[in-house]
Image (cartoon, rainbow, N blue to C red; front, side, top):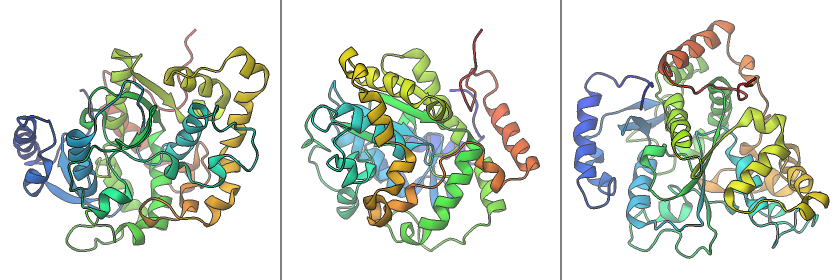
Length: 359
């Protein structure tokens, strides 16, 4: 993999030794709990204690999730995994994919009766590496992970491509790193007090809350959960070039510009394309309307309910717009972050924002 943030002094060698120990086991990465204490650590943004593993900064919670997913998850041919860097359109993608995949059982036009009226997208599509049930048991156990779910299973993940189990069909949504950072910042302001109470997040002692300027520096260094952002996106981009039948790469900005077109692409990739009869009946329009950010944000379940890790549903819905980075970031900061990304992606065809127009 090319590009990305250079590991701090001493990190690369320690990481290499730790990873070597893990991948020599029968199940790669399943031995992470035994090497976690030897991994390089440091503060990250949001203010969590992070460990450096496999080229990425991850919380103890995510590391345990990687181990559990490799040891206890058995992929099925019909599985679909929705992947993203945090705050890149995950909630919207979950709603769209769930509604498209389950439209026969739950017609999107059935006003008031659709599961999205009663449950958050995060309740309907669980994260592979994080769930209240796994956290409650500290990831202990040998039972198959999500084995009770009927096929086709729809799950999600914030893990990098290189740390995921093999054999899963993947959809990835990518977002401009500047907007991702600002969305992360606002999310951090609303959720840190709750998340610091979750085992495996804060470390031995609660960290100091960063200012936005400090958070910006950490993000530019790649020191954020699942970071560096651009390395995370690059892995999925390259995988989608090599295996387009197994990895679909979507851009959040394109989804906003053409939600119906991207929904059709998503449904076809998942193996449930819209039929001519459904197109004529306006099913695509109904799904797009049901899953619009404005619609989801206004639903009672998302205004008053709570979901993953005890977080309020409302914290997953803010503006969802393009260019909101300017509300927190100066032009000089934006130019600096763009420069960091450009340098990290040198030699790659990956770009951020809407897909380039090819004449």
